[in-house]
Image (cartoon, rainbow, N blue to C red):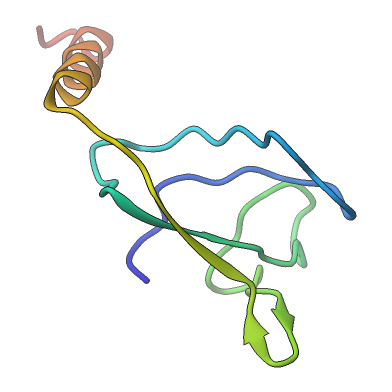
Length: 88
């Protein structure tokens, strides 16, 4: 549900401690992890056209989770974005 706020490639099999850079400007406290097939160019996220959601027993492999956010973190990120863009 909603737009993509971050993604990363994982190899087949089990993965743990996967780190994903989240675009905090558009993220909310409620997020969903969704596993996709990499059917197009290897290592390139091509959703929604090519890299479709994986399914198990007909159901999309999706896991909701919540994160804690703070306005301080958002302001730091926006400040860094302004610095990077040269528009402080």
